[in-house]
Image (tube, rainbow, N blue to C red; front, side):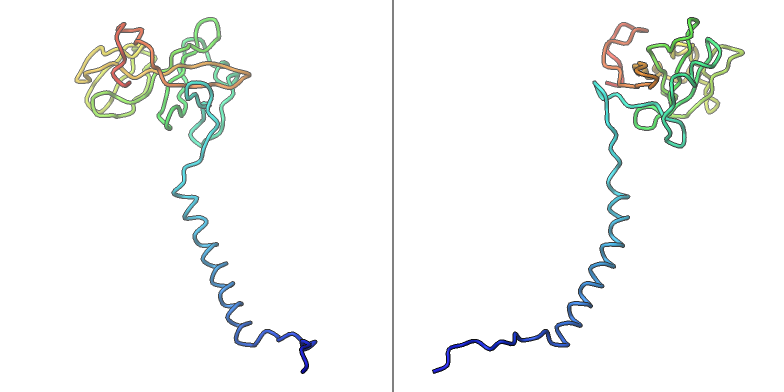
Length: 178
């Protein structure tokens, strides 16, 4: 009785080789097509600071250094992309520092964005005529509430914007947006 194994191992058949190559091609094509779809549906993450702070960015998503904003005239307002991409005004104070309060550029009437009018020293919503004081309080309606505010801090030439959770300094009450 011969119990030895043959020296030649069975080779891969032509059908098995073609099935393997076809499967590998389909898997590579499906992976290449599904990767961008997955990247589209998963939002990018950003390292947040304490209290959910994010870095101020411009309209293209580039980080804005504090020196760029502080080069503006005292009393001027710079528009940046703040929390959740909301347009936010940063205010340069008279001592060439940033104010610790940023004003979100969304009208509390219908959510319009609006410009700062330096001649009248007001935020003026062009849609329905709401006007806001420099601190974001309502001067004239139909806007029912003051503008939302955020906390602004400068750390190593980076501007950090975080949600405002303390009492609203304009009214002394709990903020309406919290």
